[in-house]
Image 1 (cartoon, rainbow, N blue to C red):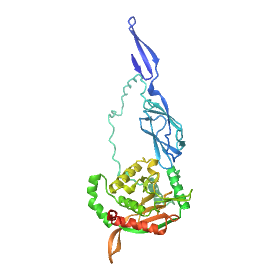
Image 2 (cartoon, rainbow, N blue to C red; image 1 turned 90 degrees about the vertical axis):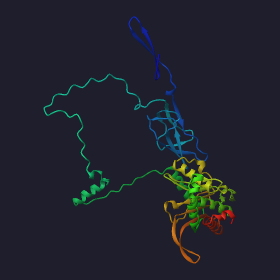
Image 3 (cartoon, rainbow, N blue to C red; image 1 turned 45 degrees about the vertical axis):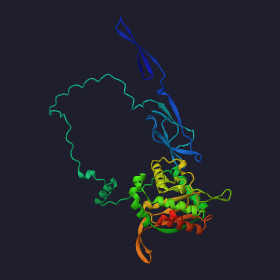
Image 4 (cartoon, rainbow, N blue to C red; image 1 turned 45 degrees about the horizontal axis):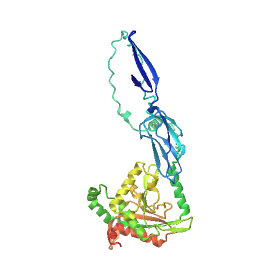
Length: 411
């Protein structure tokens, strides 16, 4: 008795005729089961998303392989295959909107696609007839040598460059055509645009500036970076100094950590510090949150930043990673920015903008010295925060970063 895919065969032997008799009968097999995969449940603040298919009908997928990605206002949700099999049908078009529980696609478990299925057995083709004798000489049995590729064939100049060269040699006029490429804005970019415009329309935004001498923190980082890396298995950067300084300044100036509830017309003060750190991704700017920073040290902050940054690069940030936040830090210095005014991240009331570190001449003790300097900017909602609180907050940031010992003596 021998089992085949979806069909069984029973062999019987007849001694009178020396012939095997084969009787076939069908059986149901589990791996041909067709299942419908639905959209996973979204976070509470997300209602719908757009589908972007990674696989097509007839594609073979393995268990946990990503079939599609659902892009929401805040993040992207990957939908894996629940089992190995073949995509039978896509129930939503590419770019279509879905909600939690919407049927996405049908999967035939354990099946094989047409391309992967073994070809039916067939009789071997007859051997080709012997070649007829030729009067022009023997037929070569090997491929002729490939001629060397000329150097100009490897030129990477675009085609239009060669066309322009021909037109120039013929003294012909050249007319240039410019093409516009229109790309649909993804949901994350649309949501970012909406929130930034809401911030401009709602907040009375004002920005104050200061500069920070980075000499001490640079020297501290240079001195302890190797020991820090050895102990904590992570590099010591500048962000931890600013995040810790922001937490210290927010505790000193609680109005900067507060928010206006426009519904009840009340000011909501927080006794905790959750700092959002702006991270640039190919799909747009995301702001994952480092929670309870007031109780963290430099190593804790660096580990949290590294973890969130890694999740952002892998597109694995969940909505929970970005919900909340009482204050935001945006570091344009990583791109070489010298100066800029950040926009408040609603519903927060303030945002700190960091910039690049550049050597500049500054007056130190009546003398001009070259120091590594950084401009910092605080944009705040003037409906809630007055200039005194804003300037005091930024000066507190400056004092802590320039001399981290301030944290130890609580100055």
